[in-house]
Figure 1 (cartoon, rainbow, N blue to C red):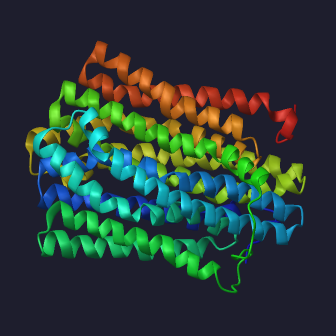
Figure 2: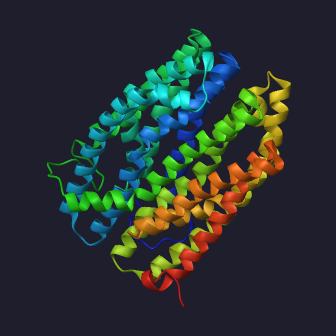
Figure 3: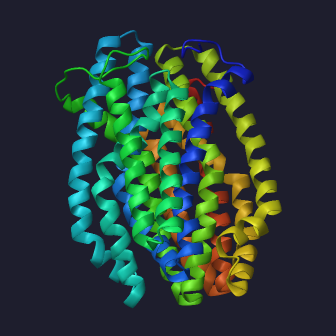
Length: 444
């Protein structure tokens, strides 16, 4: 069994992070299943509706990533300092508070669903489909929050493989129910929403039962109070991941507005395919970052500066390899992946394939900023982490998607994604160089 205190060579680092990578990839794949079934069995407008409203629903659930990454880093640092009892209390507090937040966010979602959809330009059948999908997903938001959170905390607990199994169970539930409800019973959008909601329930509630009983992991749920100072640190430290996810959703809304202007529902549908497939590719980087973060946090807490330096070097090498593989895969599979979603419409298919060949260049750069943000979170520097995420996922993206289409019209939308990632790599490099003496993760 690999321990956080071990020395990590490439093989051990890959073995430890592999379950997190597979877990995030699997989560992305089963998140894509709704789109596949809706597009092929319900039609183009319901597919556009899912893509239109899903960013808003993701904003409600992504608070789980804040608690999971921010809390996971604090718990790992606490364990590295030898304070096991305190680590369990922090873990329990984070789980209980995040569940309560999920309930409040679900209520808020019901109040804002129609105004948000209308504000983005949904009308007629598109608006009705957005509301149908959203109203069935919202009751599962508390479990969605917990599922996101436990994806991070399983690695901190030293059980990344168990996290993978839980995610696989949730994913299989979604895939099976999508096939049954949408393809089998022909329930359309309602069936896809029900399948997703039930899968989120599985992904959120199973870990609660596991950690609520005596187990073989490093953590379990115990009686605890509210440590306001620690909770504030968790929120600040995890704010980068929260910002990253909220920003991606807000940016998706801006993209949808621009695409409605330049290409109508076809543009929204094409962008939906990019985001679905892009989520799978990006999950490799996110999964590695999530898996490596507890190791980085532990060795930083234990003041093992030599190990910390090696972890950074090895991570940069691995992210570089992943980046090239993701780009090549994107170029090779642009056609088949696009056809899988929108092969029934030749015009939409051509638009999607063209967009994907441009979009795949972003994979060469995105992993470095994703890892860089996670790296500073693991060090407890939530401010720098949040700033990288803010610039990458919100400011650079919004500026690009508002300016580039004025020059290149529809192609400007696709180019803007790549430009934002390139700028984010530059910012990440500047912070890594500027903070090297403070955290002693490299010489000089």
